[in-house]
View 1: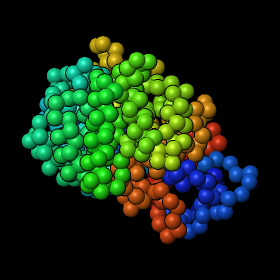
View 2: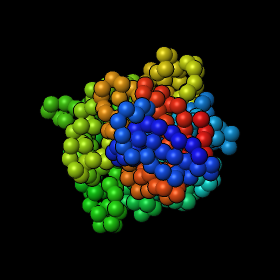
View 3: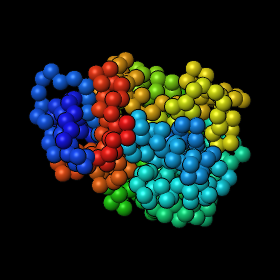
View 4: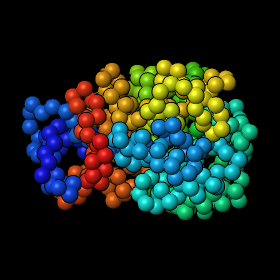
Length: 392
């Protein structure tokens, strides 16, 4: 038997205990009652729905077993027990999709996220502009079929030609559009949001039928005469019609903005699960400063910040989700409860998955092998378990 003490939160950020007891097979045998004077935290394993790589490896640039495993393990050892593998705008993503599918089938990944190529050429960010194009339904169907049901989300600019047709095709395959990398006006974004929400409802989708890719980044800023797409994405999340991603690493977004969006969206009962923290991590996550690659483009990391070597655009993140929790909670931007909800229950709901998915624990259930993190009082990661096995 092994007893681990700490304030136990479930995936919704609710305090449910003061420790857990595991048997020798990693099965939960007891959830200790809530009590005072308990140090540290125990939370379910975290879920990252936007991650390009880590540990020096990149899902789009190193689509081989060694590279895929390196990227996955880099995040798992810091408590991300479930994740999507994110690609970028590519001329032909099929080889990378086909390389990732077996890792989804054996439970190491929760699925695949296509970030592009159907995005605005004016908001490429760190995407390769040579690969950016308008949606092609025959092409997209071929990608979805190659994904064998594992493509979960796809970043599309709401204003591009055939955007709604692409959204409908994604929903047909059980995936959702993730609006982003956009130059849209607010009215254009609202039109797509409304149409997609209606389509999801008509299909009895059972969850928000859309997300927004790294809110604020690679989209027009809020303005007083033309609020733009940011306002529409936030309002849709508050209504429960969309889930917005925040790269809560204190680099992509100021912590005060993370706080404002989390508080505003979460204040509505419909928006309780409307905000997810993501890393947008690239190969340099968990690595030293230096030169890396993302989607074939050179990237340089200085002081932990990844930027395109030419042009200087931010080129993904270098944090893991447990890093983001520590940064947001210690600076007072969010509570521990809010951060855990944004890293567990909210992303699970966005993907339409529950604790039956490999690596996912939302509620603590006696008799099951949980995936969880044991944090110190300082929110450093002390232990990581996945499916009842210790990995750190």
